[in-house]
Length: 260
Ligand SMILES: [Mg+2]
Image (cartoon, rainbow, N blue to C red; front, side, top):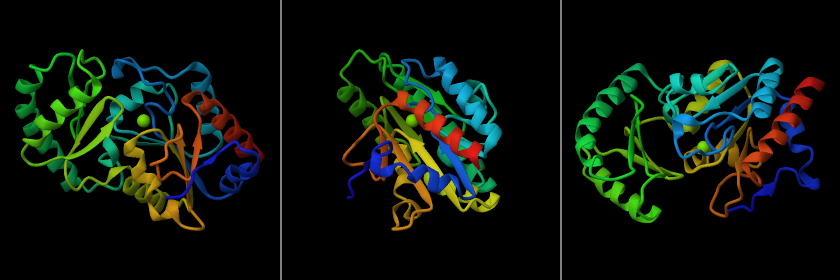
C-alpha cells in the first residue's frame, strides 16, 4: 500500500500539468464527485458553479463521466454534454460486448422478479432498476446502516445467477458477473479514442476499479487516480479532501487546458 498524496500540496503542484500536456482524457465519477450525495439519488443536482466549470472544460478538452447510473439518467442529471458517458459501471461503454449487455439485461429482469417481493418487506430500502445493473439504496432505512446493509446482503446472497456486489455509500450495487467495471471500461474507451493518458476522479468503492489498474499503479502511471476524501485503504495515488474541492480541480484543469 502506498501513501496517497494530497493533490494540492506544494510538492505535487506539477502533477496535473504533466498530465494535461498529454493526449489526456479527463474522467469523473458522478455521485459524490461532481455532485454531493443526496438522500434521494433521483433528486441530485450539480452545483451551478461546478456545472459552469465542467461546461467550460468540455469546450477545451475531451471529458468523460463514468458512473453507476444508467446513461440516460446520467444525461438527465448533467446540464452539459461531456464527449463520453459511461454508464452502469462500464456496461454501457465500448468495453462491453453486445452479447454481454443483452445477457446483463435479461439477468437484471430475473433479479427484479426475485427482489421486488423481498424488498417490499424492508422499510426505507429502495430498489433501482437500471436495466443492466441494479442498485439497492438504504440511505432512508430507519435501521442502523450496518443492519440495513447486512439484511440487503443476505437477500443478495440468494439471487440466481449470483451477482457481483459492490458496496457504495448507503447502496449495494448488484452487477452481472463478467461486467467490465469502470476500470476496463475506461481503458477500452482510451484505446478506442486514442487517449494515451487519463485523469480519473472518484469517491467510492466502484472507483477503486480504476485506481487499482496497473496503468494507474505503475512507476510511470498513464492514469492519474484521484480520490475524493482521504482513505487509508484506497489504491488512489492522490486525494482531495472533500467533494467541494472539485471546483478547484475543475478550475485548475480549465486553466491548464486553456494554456495548451
Ligand atoms: Mg461516486
